[in-house]
Image 1 (tube, helix red, strand yellow):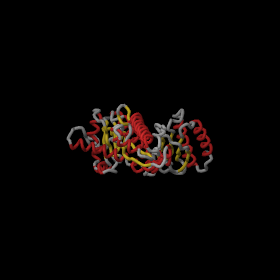
Image 2: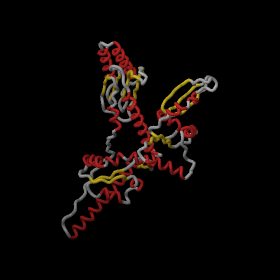
Image 3: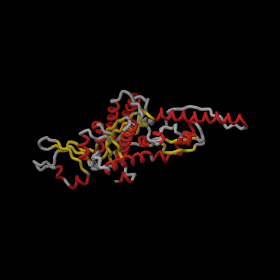
Length: 381
């Protein structure tokens, strides 16, 4: 797997984490206004946010309801403590959620979360409410970031209107300049989109107002490794920044399907290995974990909505057992939780989503983690 693919996989994991976090935060509710959402954008100052929280603490001290006042003050204090962990705002900004939420049993539970998002969050926010505000996080998932990696101008001669030898000479010069232009674009494409002899992009879109995009696409000058990555060719009405933006707009549907196409290829390769009986694949939680522990897994493919819990249990002798269960198996087979010697349920050391555990630990196994959905027919299998 290339560095670009590995970076893309890392980014997809961060996106998955934010999706899961948003879902969890949106479902949370509290009593009164004791749930704090704090977002500090890049280049802002931690000291400014700390000063603002100190002022908010003073204001909250005047809340008439004793219960609500204590809850709000506790949430502000927790937020201040989280803020003290940072000397400066991280490059992508800082997101903090603190407060007491109501569990499904009606009990109160403290939530303290702080993290640097996977890309810059250009929102400044402080809200004390009965819910956490995740709108800015949701906007991060709507990736519209545009970067110009190289820019250059070219002066191409127009068609010559006169006849005779002059016209032939101008036509020849014009064709030569057009050829050199295509060559230059092809060379720049290699410089920007191939690193260490490997393509560093998932796909390419060729756009332009004339025939150059088609000339490039069909030219022998265009590196074949890049030619196979072309997913769309579009006509635009403008040049420069306006043409760039129009190309993105016209390719919106294709761009949204890039992840879908990558997913189909990944799962297709997996089934191809199975059909050829290469012995290079395994499946199931336990067998896969054994392969991970041996350092034998290059790519780990996991369904993004897999509902499996990871339990660490301790028996009466102090020995720990790791158990992986679905909700159905937890209810149907309580024997797996039992201590054989005492006949009692073992002590629960920890319980968490297997997905969240593997998303944090996969690097320790030297593997690349790829989440897949059920959007494709392959993913549904």
